[in-house]
Image 1 (cartoon, rainbow, N blue to C red):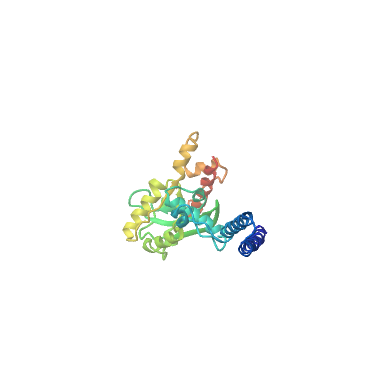
Image 2: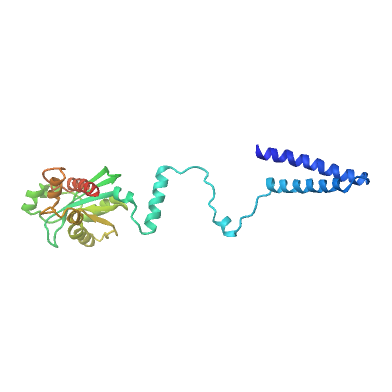
Length: 264
């Protein structure tokens, strides 16, 4: 509406100005005031024309070059969230969403020493603090499982007979974990070193992963506890009374512990 008013005014000014100049030329006896008015009207017309139809240049060249192009359609929530996370990652920060999206992992082994072999891999994928998928894979260690380990885990030599060896199982485990952060209980001193040794033995490589250790976090946040085993934490938070000592189940309990620790 504003532009329409300007346009009408400019047309009227043009007609008045042209008529005034023509009248001055054809009727010399008219006074000088008529000519001045006509010139002012034409000047006003020129100003209106520039205001309406000529787009002013930016004050600085880089303002035009760096101005973002208008989006053709609004991005979806998922796209916007992913963009924000990518930006935070590139700047070396951990976005809040990274604490909500992760995989909790756990392993069962033939023992605790450096020669221990993995007999089960387990993981749960967490999104926004909720479990959305799980992974469980028995592994043939190619050595007998000690009776004490069978007593704790319930996994026997018969259970792992015919199951994938570590060179086949680890790539599937990696695929499930994707690029997510790993969360585990005592993961720094046990799970990661064991997985790294098994990966080296199988020649499948070890991914460069970021991780959180619920053992270390609980020692910092819950100094009043005498012990910080997974069993102690699930009892402290009322999650369960016992561990099953199966990889996927313990991974799920670790995720629940991590969620509770995040609330402290």
